[in-house]
Amino acid sequence: MKKELALLLSLLAFVFIIAAIYFLYNFKSSADITIPSSPKHFTLSGFLKDTWDCKPLANVKIDFSCQNCDWSTSSTTDSEGNFSVNLYEVPNNQYFYNIVSVTDYKDLKNSFTYSATAKDKLIIALSRSNSVLKGNLIVIVINDETKNPMVTGDVYLGGLVDPKNKTTDLSCESRMSNQASGVYNFQNVPLGKAVISAMEEGTGYTAPDQEIIINENTSINIAVKKPVVVVTTGLIKGSVFNGKKAKVGAEVTLKKANTSKTLKTIKTDKKGKFTFSDLQSGSYKVTSSYKSSLGKNYKKSKIIKVRANNTKTIKLVF
Image (cartoon, rainbow, N blue to C red):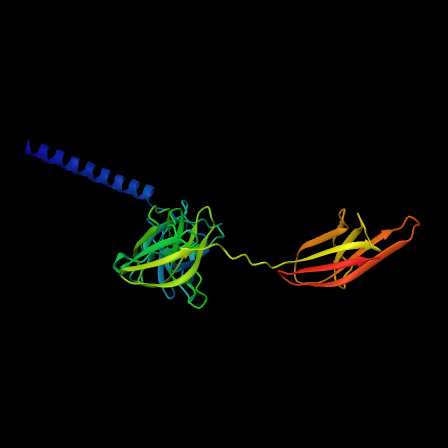
């Protein structure tokens, strides 16, 4: 009886071992990504930046791999945040990156899908970790004309991309919209220099970019104002006379001085008047001509110098 029991246990152990080997083999075969013996590879280019100010992150090492692959590779960003790395093609186009040489940032590991035929750069944008997000900013916005709070509109806050020019990249700005009190509260933002701007919905009133300094608790007031319209074009107004009589329906042409190309052709109104508008600064030639009832051709021309936000008045008399 004991021999039979021992034999049965040995048989069960053998079956268990065979089943385990079969299970492990099939599990590995289905889960692993099979890389061909002569795998194809491609070059992935990308850019690493800070989401707050869009500044490139230089000299940062990035490891790349794929799920259940037996390979990995790495690249280090240059002074402008660019990187380039050779990756093997895998059937599901799924890869992973792991940023290993920065501090004060979060979400350093992530997956991404990228095809060997893709041409776009891989943009990796890192957010700063909560340990460095100690700034709180209260922005009170009013309409400069009505003195009422801006309740519908947007306030934009971002880091300085280029401190010299004080410009921001819109993709690296935080936006807060439509606060009934006109008070916009940005919490957990980086300390230091930033740029803020605002635009009121409906009126188009704006507060242009201005540099501010964010401390742990900062409060500022800004006003949205009517945009200043800058006129960059000028006008030529004129009249055409035949002697002392206004010439109705006379043809008037406009050309750039010293050129033969006609820019515009119009006819005088019932008072013999004409207008050429939206003209860039420069010298123009204005010509009027007509043919008399006796078949004689008449022509008068003048060279006029146009300046922005300026009107020139002329009179052409035959």
